[in-house]
Length: 80
Image (cartoon, helix red, strand yellow):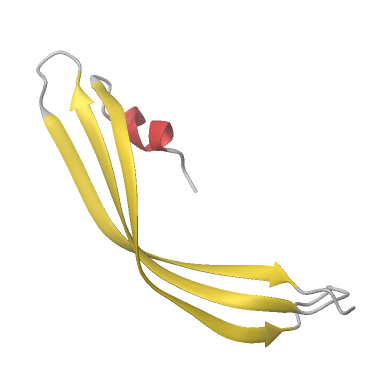
């Protein structure tokens, strides 16, 4: 995933000023067995909205872009 600085590279006079992530939902999808793994993992799905903000150093103009995002996280589970 590109960093805030990388995303702002196309706007030479703009400086990144913030990143906000609002989580709308999270769901535990249970255990999965990833290929090549020696132990199961818990699959967690997250729905969120990310907002990136920039400010022009010369004019003070501001720019904000919001978009929905989904993320799946695999959390290792130890079999004790």
